[in-house]
Image 1 (tube, rainbow, N blue to C red):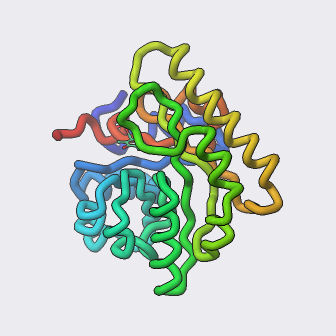
Image 2: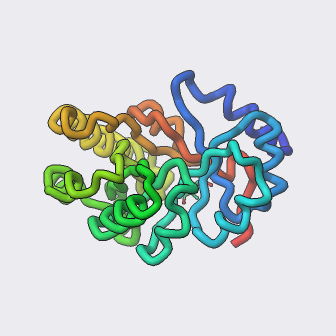
Length: 224
Ligand SMILES: *Cc1c(COP(=O)(O)O)cnc(C)c1O
């Protein structure tokens, strides 16, 4: 692994199979680091905090696509609607309805992913597979024409145990395929499966991810 952002990005891009899209997760890293990745060709970045995203955006090129990937509070939705290309972390009906409401006010359609909880940890946000299956068939999506559900985002259990991680990704991919085949006509844009981070993206790709979210392998360790 090289020791500059550009070198690490280049290495990573060389390893990712064609057809995969990469979100460079820049949370906790300064605008200069983002510009380094931008200069190396990266245009898709991910942030997990509203305040941090809004502080960085004005200093950076307008042709960056931002993905919001963190837990989003309903009272902050208004601040990012119309500014981000995709909200990857929709974890409740209430949040989806709020995104729809704020999108309607400014006459935009907002692309979102529904966050699926498959990991062992209790602390991670998201719908369980059962909750999600019920939710996508509920009236909520029909009630929310200013939101376009583009697919699912999932995280695996935080462990070195490859079998566990792979099982989590496989489960998420199965839920994704099931929804796609059952709900296809009602969710015509349901085509994104976002999973895999620095430590586990190769497994996620093997299990069917088409969008990966990689931070520390590009930008180095974060200083929390
Ligand atoms: C921070 C974060 C990532 C990136 O994690 P790394 O281990 O640094 O690659 C991916 N997805 C989400 C939701 C995150 O919060």
